[in-house]
Image 1 (cartoon, rainbow, N blue to C red):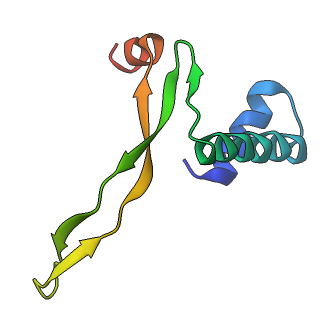
Image 2 (cartoon, rainbow, N blue to C red; image 1 turned 60 degrees about the horizontal axis):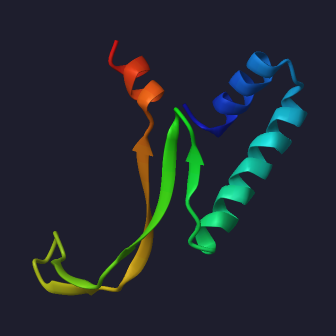
Length: 91
């Protein structure tokens, strides 16, 4: 599912117009981005938790040439699914 399909599904499920659903989704993405920048965890009980996680720098190899490349330290995001989401997808 891409963003346009998600907007359409959100509009159908919530009884919104597509324009309103797009605003809601954009606002949600902005809030999540701001929280991750501030290194805050987002927890949606039953659905899952988004946690910013630091990764240290490390050596890797360029798959085309095989030459070693240094990957800089960065922050990534970990999603841990909640109990109800796991139960729903494993039925």
